[in-house]
Image (cartoon, rainbow, N blue to C red):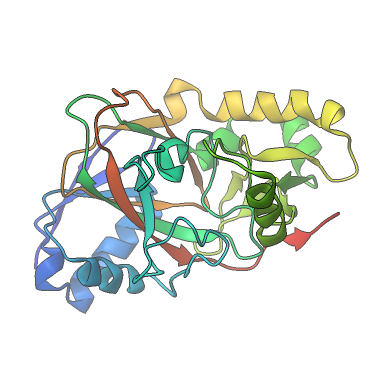
Length: 284
């Protein structure tokens, strides 16, 4: 099948037109999709009425999928490859754990030893207004740094924490489980993309501190880098429609769920996560 691409913003992103994921994607088409993925960092597939099985199968074309053992409460009970991004209430009436998912600037699974290569998020039910997601081009952000700042961050490692999000009914037991499943992981602040060879910042609001530095010493630089990377010229804002599938490259982007919608409106999306290459190490 022949595809065409429509740019989504100056910073990053392209819509892939002329593709039907449910009907299957041949090798030549997939090669073109993969080339666009590396070029634009984000790909949008609109109007994709797929089953969960088809969503998973298409995702596997990009690599091995994470079964989300680090986030067992958030994955689908029958499809561990699917992470539920939903504000649907629990059976007891309390808000779902996913209500606040993603409302910090981050790259997916950065708090693991094998952080995500890519994520494919499918919109099933979205609010009529809001519920947007913002993405930042971390390659452009790195390249815009001064030579002195590049030298400063080149060899730093950020300590990423997996439990940095709001959970409505957080108990001591739940907090202990989170710490056990997701001990702190150090990641390089500057990563070289394994396919394009370009350098990108690897930072976000889940970074607590830098290795061999205190949190107080680290915070001003973490805050600066996050603010710098999320400047408007580096950012794309996505407004979701039902049956959107959005694919992004976690190795050179970070993102933020805005939470800009009425809390009474249902927002339900499902995500697959493509495993990347090992880059982290456990730290105390």
